[in-house]
Amino acid sequence: MHVHEKPTFESNYTVQGGNFDEAGKVASQIKVILKKLGLQTDVVRKAALVAYESEINIVSYARKGTISISVTPGQVKIETTDEGQGIPDINLAMQEGYSTATSKIREMGFGAGMGLCNIKKFSDHFQITSEIGKGTHLKMIINIENGV
Amino acid sequence: MDLETIATCLNLKVFSGFDQLKTEVLDGYTGDLLSDVMANSKEGDLWMTRQVHQNIIAVASLKDHAGIIMVQGAEPAKDTLEKALKENIPVMGTDLSGFEIAGRIYNLLKEKQDITRIDP
Image 1 (spheres, each protein chain N blue to C red):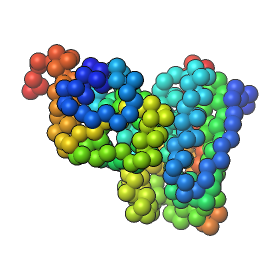
Image 2 (image 1 turned 180 degrees about the vertical axis):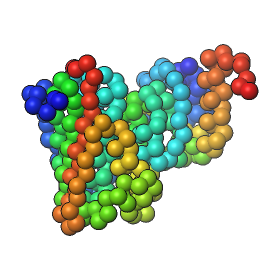
Image 3 (image 1 turned 90 degrees about the horizontal axis):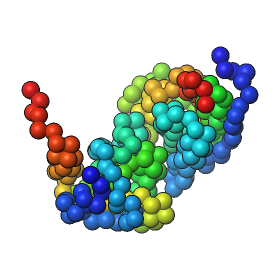
């Protein structure tokens, strides 16, 4: 358990919904920081993917959201909270290929119904909760073996 | 094999990343679904896609791709080109289809590795 360990790094980022021009910016910043902290390539790769897909979800489906990251010697924790429409059926949303994306989103190569599945696949721990009309909360943990 | 060699051999147009052409290409990946490319491509890949909008630059940068090739005569959108130039990501283009360019790059990379063995 690394839950009570003091974070070596933590930060919060705001993501604006609908702004595809800036999509991926937070994930890029997170990747640069994790690299500078000297984390293993594999951990950086997983965290960058998880941050990217979470960010794209906020941009695609929410009015705005926050991505927070916390790094301890044992794990990288990424949490996102958004103000948005929420997900009516989480089981359905977790099915690969299921998507409610608009054609505009799909034309850009997003909305293939892979994002949440990939987030789960690349995380060691994944938790999703959602409230209709309010928003969605994601919590992802990526373990760091042998510490930082 | 570096980007410059591939660009020369296959007559690619180079739109950006002019000083990054010595970057070593380790492998390739084709795909237009960004989540697929995020999940399955690797560092050092040369990414072939028909997408031209600016979000591909973030994907290539996050995945540490060697570069991007736009297929089927596609060219980067204005804001894509601006971002690619700013972030120094090599974006190239070909008139060939995704299938043809991927095949040619595959052959170049395999030749380089001197693999003469034919799988059964």
